[in-house]
Image (cartoon, rainbow, N blue to C red; front, side, top):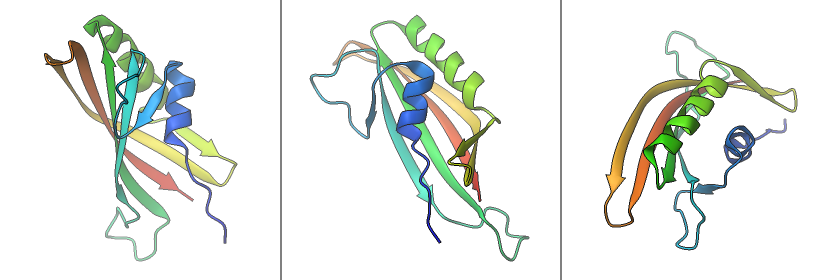
Length: 125
């Protein structure tokens, strides 16, 4: 049985049109850009089910730019495109993401506005 991987990086780049970096944004990055972090893993998200093909992850998308209004625009794009909508990978896996919260801060040391948008996911085989 082969496993198809959902490419979150590619999906987010297609939606926003800006560069996505996994985990850490390099020093020479061009802003705006996105830092992507994925945590969690395969688990039965519904304990009432004896056998389940549902797997859950937490996806954190941090948008970094010099203007907070830029982050607001990308936040709207991402939530509109992802929240509660199915995305299929090669017809074998369906990804559904749910927006669970957004946090903003200003990084004084780098002079950047940062907005982290958190999603939980369900991958249904």
